[in-house]
Length: 233
Image (spheres, helix red, strand yellow):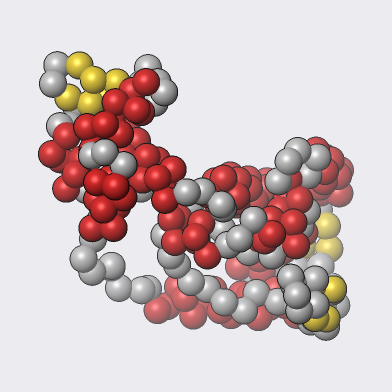
């Protein structure tokens, strides 16, 4: 696999999933430069962006047994991908061809190059589903489930691509909109409490929270009534 990393091209002989981590949508948007969209870097990362909730001080403990099982299945997946025999159930090839056509269409839109490997992702996840059930035969149900996972990855990648190159103000405006969507009918003070120290600094640099709320209202992203802020509808 040729990995044309910007300014430092390398050749990877045995590509494999090797890192598992978590971050925030905002932080990842800052890390990646616009060039990352076209070089293939984002296409090699399985991104899962969840629904935004209230921050928690201490995350729940990791289920060590489930993580151990996942690690074991990933090892089996690597072995299967490198020559172990996997058979295909009825209708699998036809269904996968339809998915491949859909993935090809996704690549034709601006920024769509990040989905170039989505078809391969479906194949790997379908194998993982089969191996988790101790099967060496991939069924249509495995591919359907894998396609659902891949579509979640696609949506998450599109959201991340939208953040790459975003200004600090754009990110703060999006954060304010997310807060209003998650907590309809909230007041200005409550919104301020749900912004980080850095975000509040950006707000102050751009005229204050009330001014930014009015801007979002003018852009028809949120609306105010009865003394509270609501999602625009």
